[in-house]
Length: 187
Image 1: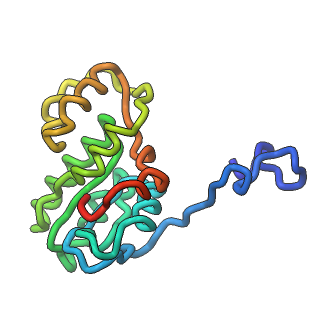
Image 2: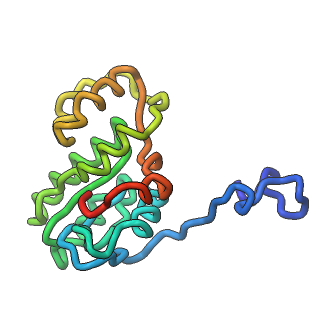
């Protein structure tokens, strides 16, 4: 879109990243080191990865943040297996495919001999509390109980209801503005 008419930089009548108070986030090649915490936090999408990398405290439980890259989570986990982390947490979109990715990732982590890939309970709770559900592509979810069973018990009911209503929650609702207002010592 940046190269199209909507963002044409030759005129002030068009949009700009500055006007939108946004920026392009480059794809990270290495984990972002946060502190000495034992948790490696894998984040599905790049915008939320960047927000968490900027806002997580260095004295919290997260030691590093890794971009999960959606369906490439298996290759990300394979890379982590070279030097296994102490603990693994995952934060992704609350939609059918996002939870299927997380469940496949949990199975891959077990096969690779990594620690259990657990949900980032605090971040999912923030998403359920502050996110604005949007229409989802999938309407019928045959494996709904198995999908939500991977999540922390505290959000399963809300997520199940959101899915049953044909809605989803994008993890980007947990952005920098929200992250600055909450204690992030635990994720």
